[in-house]
Length: 238
Length: 289
Image (cartoon, rainbow over all chains, first blue to last red; front, top):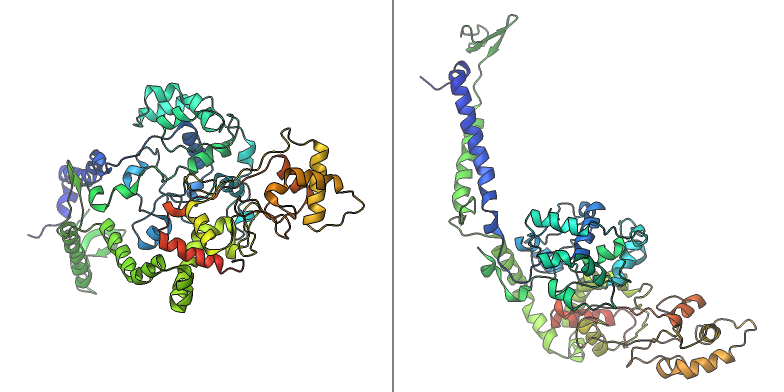
C-alpha cells in the first residue's frame, strides 16, 4: 500500500510527532551554526573596540539611517576590491552591535572610507554634499554641526556594549569621558588616547564635541584598523 | 473527512472522498514532468551540499569537495586583470614621464587608467575634470599651490599635503588676527590684495597703507607681486582663481585665521604606477605646467 497523507490526517499523534521532527530539523540547521560563530571570525592584528567618540558617532550614523544608502562591506567582487580596497572580513565588524553591512548601495560603500578624504572635506560634505559633488543625492546634515553631542550616558553605553561582548577594559570605561573630550580637542595630549585606541583620529574642536564631530571621528577610522599588507586569503582562512 | 473514494463519472478519475454540500474534489496527481523537476532540485541541492562549503558545526565548517571560496575567486580575478595590465603598468612605473609621453599608445593607457582613478578618489574634492571646489584647488585652471609640473604633481599625490606621511608637503600661514596685525591693518591689507591682485576697482580707497603691511608681512611668502611661491606652498594671489573665494571678506578671514587644507597621502591606497597614471591625467586637464 502506497504511503498516503491520509495516514497523518487520521492519526493525530503521528501528525504531532511528524511536525515536531520536521521543525526540529529546520531549527537545528538554523541554530547550530550560530553556536560556533566565533570560529568564523578571522584572527587578525589591529582590531579594537570603538573609542567613546567613535562609538557615539556610530550611534549618530545609525540614528540618521546612513545604512539605508551606504553599505559597509566590500564584497568579494573584482570591481569592488579595485575601487574600495581589500574585501571586508568578519573580524572587522566583530565589535559592531549591530553590524552595518547593509544591502542598499545608493551611495558609495563606506567600509574603507577612513582617511580617504580629509576631515575638512567630511565636514563640508556632510553640511552640503552638493557643494562638493553636484550630482549627489545625499541630504544635508548641517544640523549635526549645530547639535551638541549628548555625552552624559557615554559610560552607560560602553557598559552595555561590554555586556553584549565588546571587551572594554575597566580603564577604558573609567577614562571614557576624558577620552571623549581629548579626541575632540587637538590641543590636548593624545598619547593616552592613542595607547587605548590606536589610529583614533582627532577632530577639530575644544573638547565639547557636536554630533558631527563624533560622526567624522567614526567615519575617519572606518576600515583603517586591520593592516592587510600583513595578511592574505590563505591566512585569513579558518 | 474522507467519506467514500469513488470514481468521477465524467473524467474517470478518483475523488478525494471529500464532499462539501454536494461538491466533490478530484484527486488529480501532480504532472509527472513537474514532479521529476522537483526531485531533480532535491538531488542538485545534495550535490551542492557536497561540492561547496555548506554547514558549520563545532570546530569548523564543511569545506566542500571543490574547496571553493569566494575569497580565492576574487583573488584569482584580480590576479588575472593585474597580469593583463602588467606589461603596460610596468612600463608606466619604470619609464620617465617624457618617455611615456613619447609613446602615444602607452600614454593613452595611462590617461584612461588615470581618469578612472581620479573619478573614484580625487573628484569628490577637486571636482569633475579638476574644476575645483572652495578649499580644493582647481587643477584644470592651473591654480597650483605646490606646482603643476608632472614631478610636482606626482609628489603631491604620493605624500599628500599636511597628511600623516612624513614626506607630506606642509606649510603654515600665521594667524595674523591673533595679535600679529591690528584690525585696521588687516582691513588695509585685504583692500590692497583685493584691488591690486584680484583686479577690483579701488573706488577711491587708498591702498598705500595696505601695500606697506603686505610688503612687510606677506610678500616674503606670497611675493611682492602676489606671484606666490610653489616651493613653500604659498598660493599665488595675482590670479583669477582663488582657493577660498574672490570676496574681500574671504581675504580678511584668511588673513585673520587661515584655513589650511589637508590632502591624504595616496601611497597607502595606490601603487606607484597608478599614481603616475593619475598624475598624467591631472596634468592633461588643462593646467599642467
